[in-house]
Figure 1 (tube, rainbow, N blue to C red):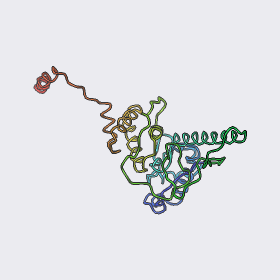
Figure 2 (cartoon, rainbow, N blue to C red):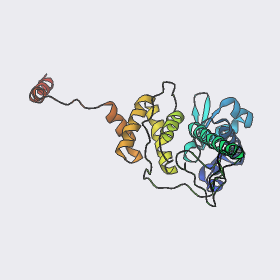
Figure 3 (tube, rainbow, N blue to C red):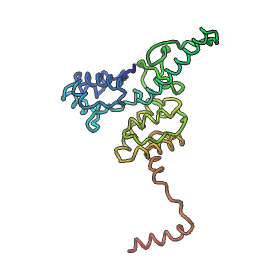
Figure 4 (cartoon, helix red, strand yellow):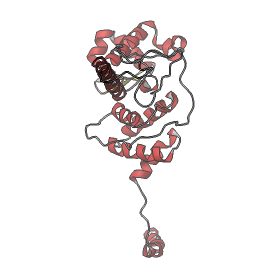
Length: 267
């Protein structure tokens, strides 16, 4: 089970007030659907019409809570508070392995071949997350576990990227949207960055795709950006730098270039 998370400012946020109660009912139901289906915040038009009225859909778009994405609708800043499909699947795989290892130890103990280590309490707990601590984090702990329960605290507003990439982002030909690019980026980190950083990177990736940069070019830029440790706002510049690397002039080029440029102007 996954959770659709909302901020505690939602009730009187200007966008909420502008959209109205009926449209916000659609927004919440659609958000729950996205979390269940792991759609990365994308709501197909037929699902939107099933959950709400056309007037409510229009109100969400007008209030900038939804964005039109082809024949679908996309939640604005979905990844600021909600995990990507890649994160959820990675977490589930890690937790399934952890439970399988615990069961193997338990069977070994019963057979007299080994004992459970002190404090090993993984057990057969169901669900996608371990028992919550008194104050849960919205980040990914040790790169594999994320609490699936709502976090009552607001996301961090720090712009510092407190992450270390474990590996470069892999190139995948099937990637064609911002959600998939974000999923690969988050999957490559040892710990999920602050929500403010994730939101800024998601905006930059979406803008770059809208500017006709390919997913591969953006992934190459993200790899270079991670290596530099810069502010999220610099991502477009790094992508441009990665694509348009200046040619290193030779000595002959340096001597001849001014003459060539002058001649071109003179003509």
